[in-house]
Image 1 (cartoon, rainbow, N blue to C red):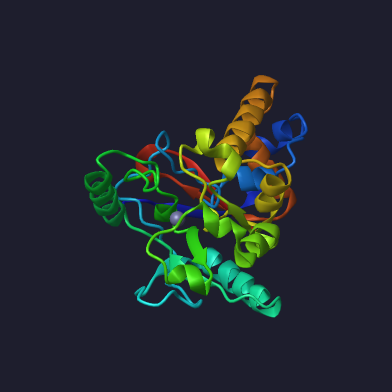
Image 2: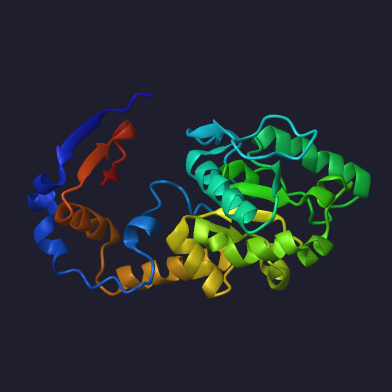
Length: 268
Ligand SMILES: [Zn+2]
């Protein structure tokens, strides 16, 4: 990596952007700009029109620490998703439900193999296995969670939604930062059939917002992208807003300059 990093206190940026940033229009979108900035890539959208790069591998994958379905080998998730999932499994257990992780991170290559196998078996794309690069599982934030009975079945379908475990997860997932990724009433938007077992980590703030407003990740993405476009069209400057808020909070800003392209990463 031919990158150079200059670590400096955000306060030093006052000279370059602070004075103007204070005159920026107020940010009125219900989600904080730092989350929308998505440095952590927790709200990354992966679907047929937003394909992940074939070489995209999250850099903070850890071995999953929760109970796995029998016959399922070692699995990985991004650290935040694994921590959140462990908390959700614990809470479910306290409520009397035993959850099993069936699937977690999948590499581009694994997804490609699965997609081609499905295509061969069904003779067409039936919307149950994502196209390579379009899988939520490649983000390292998507999980398939079942109860014991369903781990013993060959295949999954929407009937799983009727189980007490699926209903508990639907009701409580947002408390741990997860959303139901492929909702029953959003099949036309997500282009994926209802999957009552597939949850996606997006962080607690976004999860609460999406679940309370019944938004798929596609709709949420479109909503904040529209807000951001309006914000910039009305005199806002998102980058300056982020840097100004960092300065106010005494955050450390890391300036990254990969081959002449400027980026900013901000740590609180
Ligand atoms: Zn899944």
